[in-house]
Image (tube, rainbow, N blue to C red; front, side, top):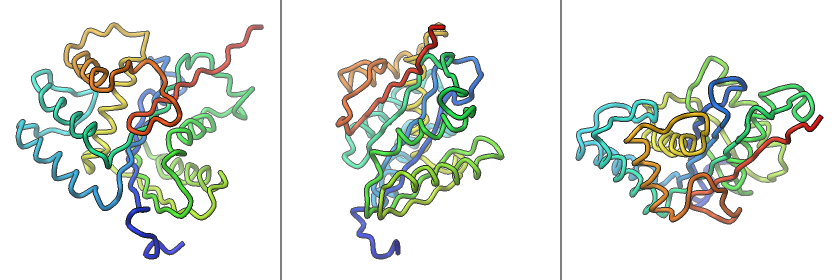
Length: 241
């Protein structure tokens, strides 16, 4: 499909990030998330985030693993920007009980196959026939391009019909919105992990404020029709013998 023939109302950019996505790491929870925004609105939202950075003198890259304890007001303003913006929509797949995964039985012996299935669940509600979607993935390792290509194959083979999707690998510091996605995913992962002691004051403040604004806990899945902050919780089946 010629992208120039698609109206602006059907052109979107989707910013993706992930937490604890490896098969074997220190976490029993895996989170894959996507933040969708109309392409025409991205520039304005970037300016708004940069304004908040200037307001709070926040000069470093925003990463959940490197939060600044004295900057809660900045994180709060950023969450308010997301929650009050009609243009931004977030969906995450939260995999719990990762130790139950049986890839030989359900995923052709491949953790990567499972990874793509879960990322598909995070993206599918944002993809509609007739639209154009530029999907931005945070650079993780040298296999990023292969992952992006495979994810595009999964989307194209899911019978979406007339849809235009392209994937890009970028560094998180290059995108304000992928950093916002990182903040949302980090909060979800932190709230859902049962293998850690939640001693971080700033992380607890962020999770608490987000739950207060949403009027629900981050450890509970949402109905499929939830559009603003959608959580799909998935738990692998546990073998009984």
